[in-house]
Image 1: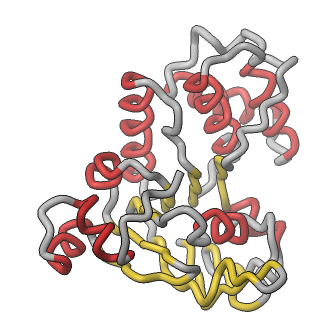
Image 2: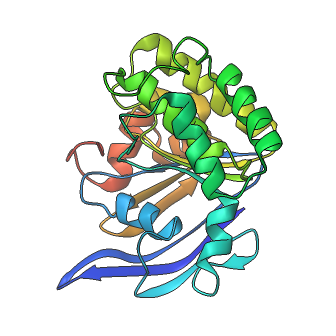
Length: 244
């Protein structure tokens, strides 16, 4: 479980995050939405300890990130906005490298790596260098790398961005599998159809603050809108567009 308590982050005079609080629970998929400049990406970066908040707490499975950031990182599997693969390495070698950074024994490493390659349907690309990979192939490799240490909490930043229809369907199916395993899944997306299909709860951030934290059905009922995109626009109070 990921608990966010009154997070604040400013860059000079700009308040990027201004008191964000929410909980992403085990066995659920929580969507994080917001218009451009809302503070969503900054919030995610503080959750996975890339940034330190000016104020507030991030608690992952009872561990305070400020007190023990390394322990929190062990509990998290993160797909960041920058995928960051090593292009000269194969997909399998990228996964192996991160597994060894986490200190996995070789026997366990092989079992987990091969299970992820199978689950993500990567058998045909596992031994190819990642240079020249399609966007979908890069995302699959980055997800396998993020999950190699078997974290209970998974943060996915725009996981389907740039994917074709088949790759998107496969990734949605995999996210459902993570939920079924009882993991906490937190992901950001700007695709309303995807959010409506996957999310148990939706946290909407606007102007650095949480303006809604409900199930998709509750958000539609609250706004009187049948369409989730229309509900989102009404909640943030403008037609300024969805986060990319």
